[in-house]
Image 1 (cartoon, rainbow, N blue to C red):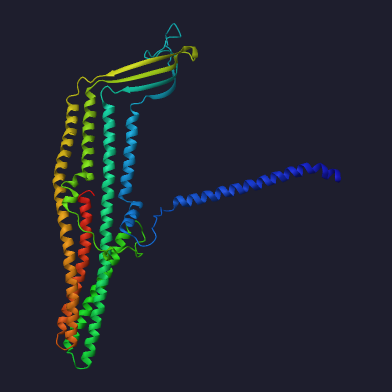
Image 2 (image 1 turned 90 degrees about the vertical axis):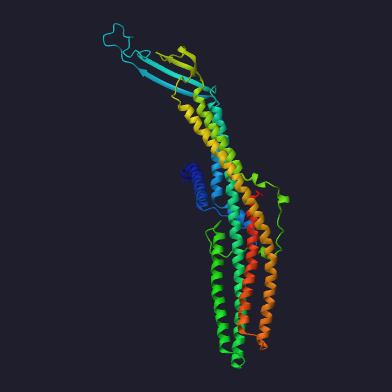
Length: 458
């Protein structure tokens, strides 16, 4: 028995090693499977937009909107496509290499005296072996490749300008939604403060009526004013909710969550810029003019590419290898081919196509002139709106202070029996309008500044 165990011991050792190897292999496979599952889940999960800590400023909202899929994302992809087009156009100047192998069988003539006679005279023999390495390059004697290169560069510049336009438009849209939300929330606050004031006055009139010091009509006026402000508060809350959803939709699908944004209406608004500070024609730096320039260059490149068919085009090819009736390396050789293609007559087709592209380039010039006048008008209008809305802020501040004092005095006179309830109700409405006008003036001023940034290409 001992001898038998001693003889089986090496096999047991080998079986143990194999068992440990299989155990390690199973662990390795499980690890690879777990990593694969994690990677697949990460790839399948939607991209998460980073959220900055604390309240969101306007720059934070713009950053979040740029990080989420939008028209800016598509513009970036279009720019990458245009850059690939430049690589493709540049490759036309480089030689191409290729390898080919072929075997051809040509049946012999049926009544031929020699078996080497073949039936298809266009071929070189009964059997033909071809194994060749070749290279070819197009000598751009007609200018076609250079025109294609200029067209690709113009497409890249147009895509770059388009990306700038998309980023600018997204920034302006986010700013409008941001100011709209700030205004809506301030109007909610104004309506709720006015509603509390109206309820306080209604309680006062109710107490005076019980004491015989007020008329029933005064109570009806106070109740009507309370109901009116309550309805206005409900409407303003809905507007604030919709404005919150509008702003959040630029970077998240969870639009129902309340956004914590910075309230810049608590700060002193910056003074407006003047035409002396910005210059007479800052609108000439708008990306639209870069787009016009790129479009014109692309049409001119197309015109040159169409005209290239009238010029001689040269192609150089070089081949080395085997092209023989016998598969023998001894029969190797090389050949060079220089091809010159000259168009003799095309029935004015090329000239018509070239003229079409030139007319399209002239249309771009006309559009640029029209845009220059339009953008000049927009720039001056934006300057005027900024100046006007900035003055309105000061006016509405004085109006709000006067309305607050008017309401205080109206209540004092009514409580002293010298005023009417109608005066108090009218003073409440005036104060609501004054406060709403003040915050609307702030929102209009910041929106006007945003429009000026677009008009002046700031």
